Image 1 (cartoon, rainbow, N blue to C red):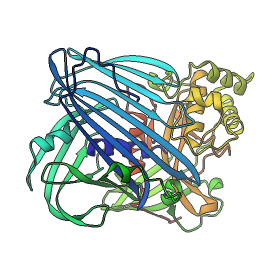
Image 2 (cartoon, helix red, strand yellow; image 1 turned 45 degrees about the horizontal axis):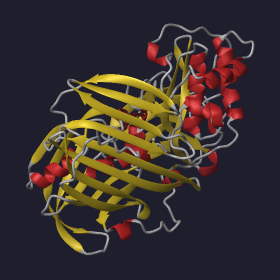
Image 3 (cartoon, helix red, strand yellow; image 1 turned 90 degrees about the horizontal axis):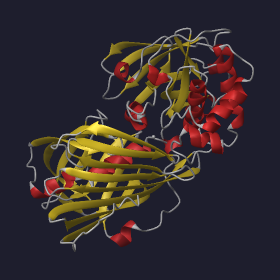
Length: 495
């Protein structure tokens, strides 16, 4: 189903339930529809999904319950990353959401679980990350639809070529409401998994939480999506509706390596980490690089053409001494991913800081400490919380970053995470990366505990930054710029 396909796309960026709610006093099911899909990435089978739609009567009212389960396995630098996502929603026949459960399992990381219930004009959310529960409330409008509304709506009221439709729907992946826009293009001869062509209506879907991402659905006469595709991270992701037997076929073991397949190859840069400044020419197909790349103290972006920009990156090192000035509270607060109030996080922060009092000295020690403690560079986790990393002491750049950011906050030093690209000498290529910035003397100083060099050189290109606050943009949306530009970028060193 298209909306479930979009949620699977969101999770692939990270690399950004048994959720069937209790059905007390439910009467026998009136209708039941089950479909299966197979998932391909860059031509390689990576998993499957199952969707079950049931119409039940509960306390005299008709309810539509949709349960979606997807399983995916991909490679990251040769290691398998396994993800299982389950979403269950209850809604009215008109698509008004009543409740939902959402679970994301990514072993060995702990599962994340979100449940939501509509009560009058409020949505009551319960989020569980690393075993810790946080309850919040959002204002709710009755006209906001469930995340599965679109699929049934297209069956009930099909679009015709040239027609458009828009509505607002809640996205459990983000815990936010998105504006969904549908545009029917035209009928196309479309090859399905069996290779046979079929004349299907192409509908392009966009949503406001990840502007620029287009998901194409190919709909049959009944309004059912037989194929869904999109381009992201330089690869094409496609789902086909198939039989249960076909969907459950074993993956061959030749999974697409997401990390290797998304590298941006460039001419060799000598001694990139020691340079003071590097000037690049960045070309981005279909998108102006000056909108994808951030301009700040360390990175100046100058547009020189519709899809070309000059980017000058200047190294900034940790000062010998520093003070901490006033910043927004989101950069100091504990959150579900940056758990600075976690007991283990605080224990690591105290060990790393030692007897140091100066924020600059503490920052330098913490970057080194996290680099040395996370000895198991595990690429099988999409994104764990700081509390869990403090316990397992393993992970990749995302785990290094959330732990360092949390430890800094535990000592009163403002922090945020950064998503972008880093040049890797051994590969002569830029790859997706996350690092940290600490606010010292009013400047955001870059840190990278993954590399552990006590200096971030000008071989980093910054795409997005986030405090990972609970009430701010989601962790996944921080990865959106990376998802959209990888595969579209060309990078050339000018000076």
